[in-house]
Length: 333
Ligand SMILES: CC1=C(/C=C/C(C)=C/C=C/C(C)=C/C=O)C(C)(C)CCC1
Ligand SMILES: [Fe+2]
Image (cartoon, rainbow, N blue to C red):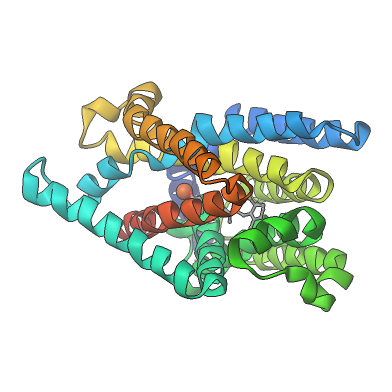
């Protein structure tokens, strides 16, 4: 008589925990639209191999400006919520001060040792993307070690495939930022395909541990997502595939998570568009900053260094964002 009881309890528990925490981006019909869009871009690459570079760059810029930058531009609201900050001078100074100090630390590291700056950026990005994608399974898992391993493993798929497999495109960007040419690592270039395939397989294997812990339907969904994303990462220009992932999976999902999380206390963020409105000031400041940088570098005659400066700037700006979001999720776990 013991068996059926345990079974029923587990079913109830699974249903309860996984349904309550299923993020918007994993719910139908949105999940279907996003997967469809991802597949559409992949199929476009499959049939039209020679997509003009300027179209690719426009696509990249569009997503970065529409959702990428804005998803970090509400960090002040997230921090106010996570650290219970008030609108007073002292608390504001605390937030902006800490944010700037973290930025300055990574900036200093980039100057002292560009390779270390780059490595810190890659490791933290891997964790941040994995956490954003898979935090919703946390309430269904007892082992936090397995959860964190899943985050790292997902992040590896998202970063290693586009960066290593497309080394012809990414190596010059990495070299201009870090001073290090990854093509010096011969095994990396010679076995780029194997490395990318292993990056994918390790995650597919680790995800098997989810069986029995979350609904089979959600596991099938998650496998489909990983396979379609990996397919896109293999065949598309890495800037395009990354922008698509960053724009419609990472950033959009982040907005939905924040809307649900923040609206509990703050009714000015209760709808998606209300939250999006809050991103406007810092998004505009970032864009003005970018335009200014372009002119300053142009005037100084070092426009070629735009990519490296931009890359370092992105890493410096995103480190406090990644640390803050980690704190936000840790409070929820
Ligand atoms: C190295 C490298 C890339 C990696 C970019 C990364 C790692 C961005 C991280 C952004 C973060 C962490 C945003 C936070 O929300 C690209 C552009 C794919 C291609 C060129 C080479
Ligand atoms: Fe982020």
